[in-house]
Image (tube, rainbow, N blue to C red; front, side, top):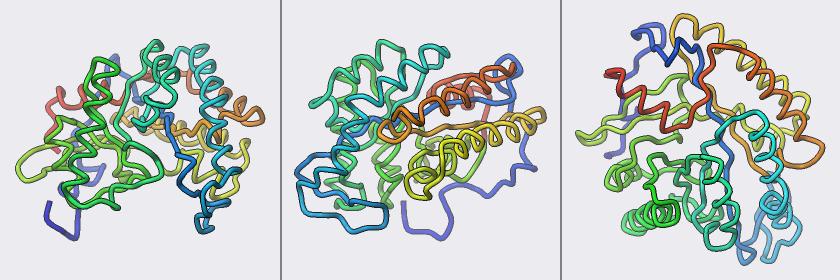
Length: 293
C-alpha cells in the first residue's frame, strides 16, 4: 500500500450504512481476546510504563509477564470454561516453542488462534519489507503446523503495521486484521485491488492500557466493560455491533483482578441477543451477508 493520508477504505459514517444483522437477531457480536505472548529474557523490558527499557536481564518486569503464562492464563481459562465462552487468542508463535502446553489447552477449549508476531518484544515496524514478509509467513505456517489450521486473523504486536503489512497478510491468506481500532462494526479494506476485513478490537476495553498504563482499578475496569456493553447493546437493536474485551494474562490473571473479569462477563452472559463468537466467525458472517463497505 502506498503512503496515504486516510486508510485504504471509504469513510462511511455508521449512521449511513445498511443495518447489520447478526445470527438469531443478536444485537452484539461479542469476542474475547486473550493475548498469548512471549518475552525473551535476553531482551530488556521497561520496569514501568513510559520508562526506557532496561538492560537484560530485566528480571522483575520479565517475571511479571512470565506469571501470566505460568498462572494467569490458566485462571482465565477456568473463568471462560465456567461461562462457556470460547476465546480468540492472539499468539506469539515463539510461545509454541517455549510453552506449548498453553497452546494445546487453548485448542482443546476450541479457541481460535490469530497471528501476533513471533514475540512481543519486536514490532513489525522494526523490520525491512522482506524481513516482515518472511516473519508473517513463518507465523502463519507455524500456527498451521501446530494446530492443523491456517490462521485467518492477525493482530500486530502493539497493533503496529508498516505500509506493506496488509499486502503481506493477504499473500498469506489472512482474511481479517484487528489493528485498526476505528469502528464498532467490521468493514472492508481495499489493498491494491484485494480485500481484507477489519474487525473491531479495542484499546479502551483492554486491561493493558486501562490497568497497566492508566493505573485504573479492577472495579473501574469491570464497570467500563459493563457500560461499553450497555451502549452497544442498545445501539445494536437498530444495527448490529461488535464488542471486544482484550486481555493480557499477566495483568487480568492475578488473584485480585480475576473476579472483576468474571463478574463483568457474567453480566454480559445474563443478556439474550448476544452472539458469543470467535473473530473468524464474526468476519465470515459479515462477509457472507453481502458486505460492500
